[in-house]
Image (cartoon, rainbow, N blue to C red; front, side, top):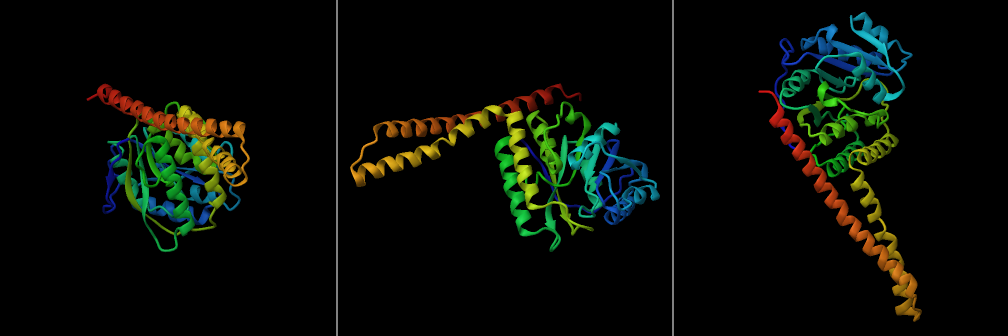
Length: 316
């Protein structure tokens, strides 16, 4: 994949956007944070009619807060952030959609840059490069780094923050997107779909602030996101996952081989059958690991071909 980076610039206004857009704010009991987020969006020139709040059943008057400011608020289908985003995609028809959390963590001043960069890419992610002190604990930064590295290894990307909650995407790039993730895994699902279909994913560096209100994302959600990434890999590159799983045979094979060697060297007992089993497991695991690597390279070659085809068929 080819990604592009763009340094933080001074905020601009969305007076003449290159693409018609909708700013989508998934919410669940975000009344206080939503109020500050909406005011900031208005301050950079985004009118209420360009914003859609998708609520997951708030009990704190989140929707009333949006409607009081002239912003449309709808109830999502299903539960969790993933279903909120899917609901928004069904209820809107603009060529571009900007997704951002409503807890005031993501500065609205980057929306114009996301939309500007979207002229050259299918998705633009706001990579959290400048976190405010105390905005993100070390355990979450580590988890995000591990999950992004896992995603890059599987899908052949070079992203720095695949789980950012602020990104812009072209609607046409989401054609064929299936329901493969739950909750906070929607960001990786969208990126996986675009990467696997030959789309361009770009990043811009953004600031990240302390959230307003109670934090909803916990360590357990990181585990769920990791499982979602594995499920996405099964969907988009099943050959790699199959051989990667088979490569794990090397571990029990080495354990059995160590036991056989110990019994032979130190106790004089020979286990020919177990020795043959251990050799077979190790050989099979090594061969599977090699095939898993080959599957990754073949997938990346497929992506390059898809990208080349898209470029040649793209209207000038």
